[in-house]
Image (cartoon, rainbow, N blue to C red):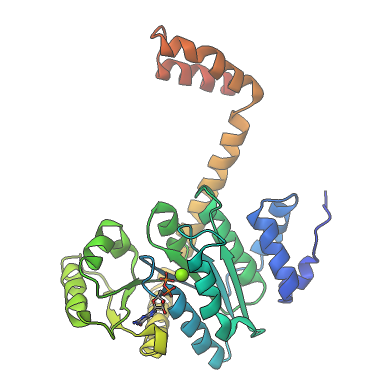
Length: 316
Ligand SMILES: Nc1nc2c(ncn2[C@@H]2O[C@H](COP(=O)(O)OP(=O)(O)O)[C@@H](O)[C@H]2O)c(=O)[nH]1
Ligand SMILES: [Mg+2]
């Protein structure tokens, strides 16, 4: 059954700004018709190259994203940007800051920028960010940049949705150790040591390289590039490294493998979501609330109650 959308999907696929913006809102808010629309979107995805930019708050990710977008524009490529920053709410300073720094590219028709915030909960954010990236892909953008703060699993999931993941760090002491703890070392295809205009940049590069040295060998060794995002220093080299990683992935067949793995994960998530929704019917919610006291007073256990609920689901 076709539902009435607030935009024409064909306009989205033609790259129309207003239609794309409305389409992302549909997806972000899971409005009626979003799944049906995403089905159409899917068949038009796969052309864009996705770059993840992640790292600690304040590392210069937005500044770098802005400069990278400018670089790609000069090459004649169109760019879509999804900035996910759960640490700063919509009205927060960081986002406002992002807006200011993005002005270079904001008025450019070849660039589409969308900020997504968690609105209190991280649940589903990575799914929505990936779906928004799909919309941008289907709208014809050549490069999609996903900017996320590297602070938690959900952000790592978003970074994992990229073909090439760039981890941005700064010279501040302990940053590389923090990154290691946060799992950023695992997901980086290469590192950018930003704010190289500050003291300690070379030592920081060394300490990241030391940590990398202990990682297992593979066909691709993550490099560490220095940059000063605020004045554009090193941005061309970063774009070149992205291109190098891309051709490595394409040459070795790893790009297809990576994308297949990503799709498998998505299907698993969709199944899990669907099952969760189907599972918690009014009847089973009632069973849970009526039997919970038995668990509280030890006449039953969480395991027995879970089994009872699952049996009820299977026998329905
Ligand atoms: N000194 C210096 N400051 C920078 C550099 N890159 C970004 N900044 C500043 O660092 C602050 C945080 O940058 P932002 O891009 O918002 O960081 P994000 O939170 O990682 O997105 C801003 O005030 C930037 O102007 C750099 O290379 N050197
Ligand atoms: Mg930012």
